Length: 366
Ligand SMILES: *Cc1c(COP(=O)(O)O)cnc(C)c1O
Image 1 (cartoon, helix red, strand yellow):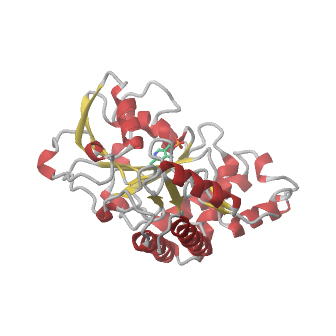
Image 2: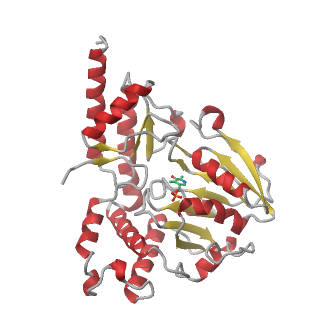
């Protein structure tokens, strides 16, 4: 088998031990003679899987009892509609515009005629390279929520401090840094995340929602109704059973890494190594304000598009997969999610140094 380092922003690398466990159980789950993929979602075997998954996530994120955990479908993108539909009809909803995904959340909310969308602050003036400041005074106390994207997957920025929203619930798209931060769940009204970055395979969307935010609005669709989904423990219809099973294995793996504290230490170490290498380099640089650097998605550029292209092509030949930056930003991007091994960071840094030396020699430098 070819060994590669997969820097994909999503679907992303999964922990090897998780894939091995899934492989060993693929044809025969717990002597049932069936694969998890073949189990009824109403069977006791699957019920144990979804309950364990929820319990593990509650333990890892220390989710208080007055929050529901939902395992839904439709990706983070469907949450761009579900959040305003369930929380903000006939009300105002504040958004902080910090990147491509925030913009999409805003544009989807604006499609709902019953919701008044207000953009509190934006970093679009500087290509989303920083996080704008928001103070409590800017927030309408009657607003349904303030929506943020905690980690901007494409631009490589993250909220270090959360905005103080007073009594107005904070809603977070945490798709690319859930389980890679030590935010407190009680600081949020709603947290949502597509699974394919830091949780498991695509097809699963995790929503964590405070009880008092359920059933606030009339929702004209069963599938889009948080309350109905919560009342049915995410089993209103067939949930993405296999993705939930893999997520459960990933949660177990994180627990073995020392839970959030342990995994966060690894993430910080990996990110620090790469940022140091970028900062040391005369060729590569980070386009992002250092105060708001993401731990999980690290963009870097040479400043010359053709050279970026050459770097990505050579890197791919060496087994560094998916380093090409997002088409909207260009350059390179290394996504260092929880499952990405530190050896891959060392290997990338070595490769960057070799590339830089060759470039300097070819260009008559020293
Ligand atoms: C990937 C991503 C999305 C989109 O997720 P889907 O599950 O593909 O809909 C939304 N927000 C953020 C922050 C992301 O990283």
